[in-house]
Image (tube, rainbow, N blue to C red; front, side, top):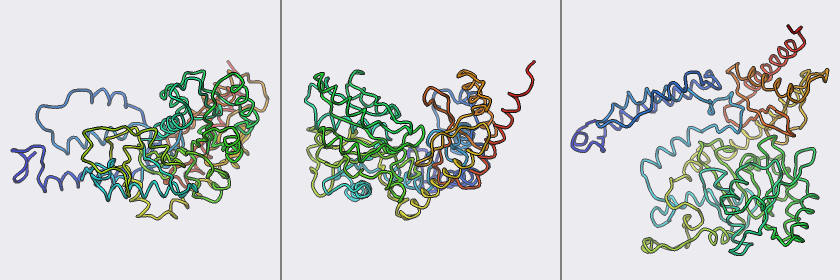
Length: 486
């Protein structure tokens, strides 16, 4: 590596021409990558482990050519789940907006520290703009605040810690928290990391629609109080990962107020449907919650590593996370701007705010609203079409953008184990197309397939193709099962 006055004397400082050359090569690769997404396999793991083994090793003593490294990187990027492509309908897609990649390029390049506002006041304001927009989106009042996190897991963890600090004494072992059995595992993990034993975590039954049973919740809270425990937190789902079911948030707000509980809403997957009229109807009452987890890397189509938490009373967030450090005494305390380090588990971190703010500024909020409306419509289309496929059960009408379904032969002769095997074969058959990639879960003990539509690159053409692929796979499965056995 060498260029002009940099290079040989200071190998960590490439000169201007070398920076331009590396930048051009990287940009050309990314443009090729994004252009090729529609035709790339939705999942390609063939040879992936072998490639991973080839990449094992320590770094070299002397520098490597950037072009050689980039070729290696391009080969690695081709192997795995194509989470950025239009056919990725598994788990929860994260589309990865190009504008957000540019934002990270800029923010990492200037490398400013934003978690204490004195270090970069204007950048701290940009991040505060994002947090304020999120609070306003959910009807939170002045005095509310939030943080940007690495994802929903850290946001749920911070929410639990904040509720614990607000409502329980320092000896909190008798505290109990409640969430439906459909709630994301990060809530239970967050409770464990926050110091709660397993006996403190109550899994509330659900209704046939897979929403939390509010009457059962009331009974569990009453019993725990009678047993000398300290109920303090209930978690509502603004879209479960299994089916996208939305808990009756307004009813849960009422329970929380009556019982003196903190109501946290896990909207990591579904929360940004609040931008749409249908979402606002489903989330009625959410403005009365105490905190909400949101994942911009899901509902705003941003790169992985972008989550958030908003809290109705911002002071509660600070009380739960702030500690004093003598070595930071030269920095200005919170005033007009916010020291996010005082509200978060993290001190050092990247400038996440720009990867949210730049796409919103560049495209406008309306573009995100329209994309989310499209995903709701596409899920309804999949639901209608799959219901017409002989042999498929589609038990739950989608509230958001997830459609769960399973194969159940019309003759009813298959037992539970055979049904699971048949559905596993169906999933493998669909994914073998490499045009779409689905995932499965278990609901009521039964293996169930799911289509999750949440990429800005997934449109009607790919969804129609997905339906045809599922239909064809079901027909082959039915024919194979009904054929004479040797």
